[in-house]
Image (cartoon, rainbow over all chains, first blue to last red; front, top):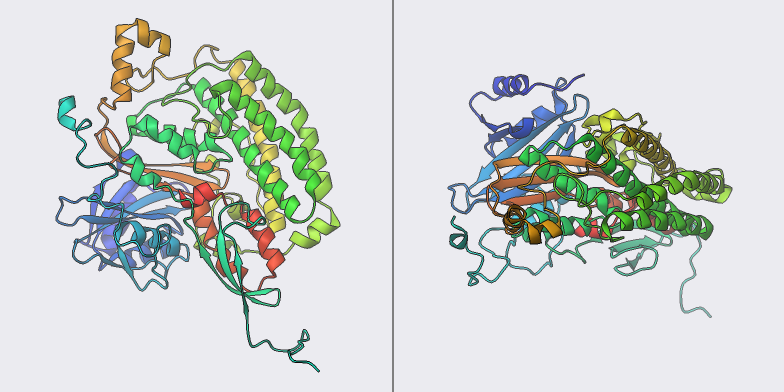
Length: 167
Length: 403
């Protein structure tokens, strides 16, 4: 089977989830869609089990933080359909005060550590995860270090500020 | 008069003993801790603790221009760092829509395949050591040295190579480098054959590895395994074949696949991959003959660092040098995921760029991290000695595991 065209893929998803999945773009040919956390498990299940799609390979789960947005924490799934050699990126944005999302461990065993890593660095709580603990950082760490409010360098340092470079 | 009970093999044990395997244990080849519950020599359950050498590369990368991220990628899988370097450079090239010349692609293929060989040499050699055969490891180590000398000739360093530039290489390959490659191609096959003769039908080795830690294709896929481990389980997923990068589509090579995913199949798959890598290098050298010999980078002055002597003597070069080093060149606002076939599996770079000096977010899909999570569950019911060689055959590199 050849690669599924983005339009075709989108049509299949749109038919199954009318009005619940938005397209965010297709940078460099990789279709990116957004959905809400209420539909994420159903959407992932559909993508994994639909006989024409078969996104059986969970490439990655990670997150991103946009502090200025209304929904600042985005959870990002990369899926790969090995039979059709198609990739898709699924995003779910969450509000800052309620960073809960259903776990994907029910679909892939491999989601376990990926979700633990995402929790460890962004504080995303995956509901239903069997063992949601920190993984790379020490257990008694109190912050989620990949969030943008934790600067890497001394925030008082000014020699790298953008206005020095005309930005 | 006995004041402590004597157990026989058939007595049910009421207490398990706890064993801390690691974090620094000579059998684990890296910083891994597993707390195991043992019933005699059999593992009842285990818990992996990782993160001992976590260096927050993803956070650091959010504060570095693209070139300064290359040395970070070195330190992930340090047994095959050129693959990481070039994977990162290709990610940036994809973001910037840079088309590299064919000669650059072929040179990259040579270096990446040499890196794959050096990584597999270590893994399979160490697997031999853990089953009690030191000889193979020592034989093969000589050729890893030969590969490191080739790196040295090209970029000046050996382990953490920081090799190449966005768009190509910092300098052309010299004749010594090509001579060393040809020498390697001439001498290594005999050593690899000898290595295979030592192991492939060796009774002790086969008894220790065959059927140990067998993994079905379904389980391997469910755990998102990739690379030689997934192929040993019977799934022919290889990024080089599925989504060719760096002109892999021009080459003729096979993707070796195993049958039952045990330690022995993984060993055979890795050995066969070394043969395929040799084929690729040979083909690349032949293809290079037809390419103009003075091209070693793409023509992208906004991103390719100019040679140092020009920086001192040429105004444009100085400007570009400054702009590149300070990250002052405009880049598109886009998201890109690029995967390369690392020695351990799919090595992915997820780059979210906002047009600034450094990535807004950079995530590494590290195959060791994802492959290792099955280790504790799959060790249940296994003998401790089997779990040790299972870990060797997973080829977990601590730097890549912890990033």
